[in-house]
Structures are given as C-alpha cells and as structure tokens.
Amino acid sequence: MRFRCWWTFGLLGAAPAKCWGRSWKQGIPAVKLFKDGDLASEFTGALPEPMLREFLSKFLPSAADKQAEKATELEGEGKISQAKALYQAILESDLNHAKALVGMGRLAMSEGSQNAALEYLDKISLVADERKEADRLIARLKLQGGAAQNEAALREKVKAEPNNIAARFELAQALASVEKYEEALNEFLSIVKTDRAFQDDGARKAMIQIFEVLGPDDPLTDKYRSELARVLFS
Image 1: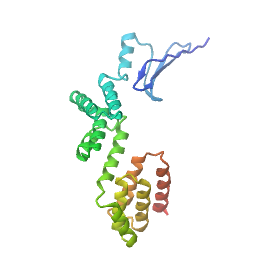
Image 2: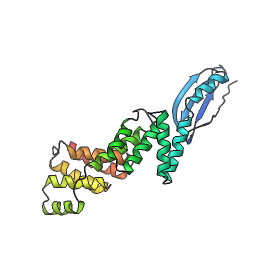
Image 3: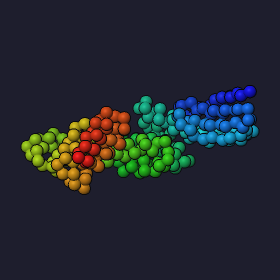
Image 4: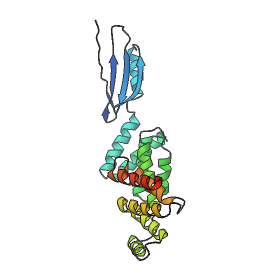
C-alpha cells in the first residue's frame, strides 16, 4: 500500500513558507522548504522536534527583520524620521542587515545625499534578496549624477545643432536624471547609431543602466533592448 503526506509550516516574511514532506511505503520522508515559491532548503529523514525547530528558525524572520518591515511601513506612510531612526537602530546591532541598508539608501537618495546612498547600497551582499533593488537604485543614482545643464536649453541646442553629439548626450543624461526614460533611451540610441565609441561607449552603458532601473519586464526595456541589439549586431 502506498501513501503520501503533506505538511505546511509557518510564514517567511510576507509570503507563506511551505515545507513539504512526502512519505512512501519505504518509510524515508523527504522534507523541502519553499520560500517565495523557490526551494530554500531540504533534508531527508525524520528529525526530533528540537532539530526541526532549529531547521525552521534559519528561515523565520528575526527580530531585526520584523523591525525592518515596520520601518519600511513607516517609510511608505511618509513617517521618514521614525523610519530612519528604526533603520539606524537595526544597523547598530547588525551592520550588514540588507533590508535596513536598502532602506537607508532610499532615504539618503530622497534627501539628495548620493554618496551616503551609495555607501549604504554598496554594502548589501550579492546574495541578499535586496541586492536587486540595490542595483536598481545604484543605476538610478548614476543616471541622476549625469545631469548637468538645463533641459530646455539643451533641447534648443540639439534642435539648432542636430549633429552635435555632445549636446545630444547631455540632453539624454538630463532626461534620464528626471526619469523621462523613453526620451532618454531614444536619444542614447541615436548616439549609438551615430558614434558608438562616443564617451567610451557611454550611450550604450547609459541604456543598460536605464534597463536596470526599469526592470526586465518593463515594455520600454523590451523595446529598446531589441532596438539596441539590432544596432549592435547589424
């Protein structure tokens, strides 16, 4: 006779965590723990309750994780000073807490402190779940750092001198810095078509940074990544 059993344990962060065990008549259970739909860990065999609790504790949110979630809620509610104080308190006890670091990075950006934001974001581990958000924020910071001149003045200059690649590049940077990404991508793509080597391949690199900010599923990323590929490999 064959049978199977399923168990579900607890929560991991905001998403349910499921730990599945399947038993057949051979009698050796296989236990798998999923986090956000992905396999996080597993073991084979039966464990006594203390060991099972220890296994699960590695994936359950810590006190610092819960504080960081609260700080993120406060940040979303516009209670910036309270959120900042909570993030800082977390980092006093855990210098590398990823969610607190990315939170402080966001707040530093909103305050216009680019260097401080980069310092926080660069500390986030490459394997942390927050690394993707950190990379997007860093890309946005780099794009913002490229803005130098008045957008309207640059538009007039490009209109009067359509072959002035330097002016077009500055306009594209200015557009990207205020998150007018479609226009910026169009200008950068025009530069790649005309002179890819300009500013050490700067237009292509800027387009990649914008793709990073927008994310892979954004329609603009899909459209301009395809157009960039056609230009590069034609």
